[in-house]
Image 1 (cartoon, rainbow, N blue to C red):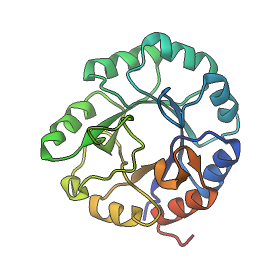
Image 2 (cartoon, rainbow, N blue to C red):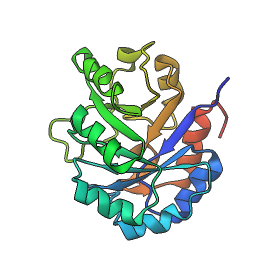
Image 3 (tube, rainbow, N blue to C red):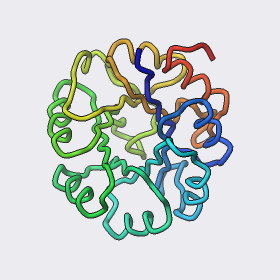
Image 4 (cartoon, rainbow, N blue to C red):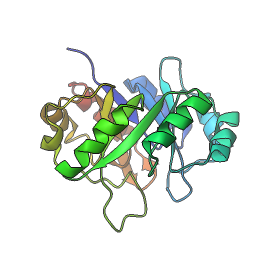
Length: 216
């Protein structure tokens, strides 16, 4: 059976980058969004990026970032992929890909069947799609809220590009989420934290082990 690919997002400390990589994460995510408790300045992200071993993809999460914002980040941080987590249109996804020459993952929020058409639309322009839970109406953040959606909505669905499941995942439910959706890739941020922005080494290890069908 193919091992599931895990992304640990919102990392802010070198020791957690090291734990994620050592435990088998395929991706590590750095957040560039001022309102997030996981926000990093480019200089801090650059230092963390240099701690990431070869073979682990470095993903930069941005929310409705301008070209100027992206240029400032990429001038300092050697990212492998950009994750667009705001209200970016399909045209914006295409423009970012063309301008910056990096693969782009587009996050799409799902709450009910009416949201599924957007997944098809973005799959035509993005290199990957992140199938996430729609944030609550009063949420300050577009992601990392620890909220799940009904995974049965996407059971058996496939798209033309690789996709990743996110939203409310944690060590105790990721195996079930994978079983219900058939996801080959999963993303976690708040589900491996003890408080907003504070990652936990044990939870990181437990999440990756559970996602890959191992015992922690």
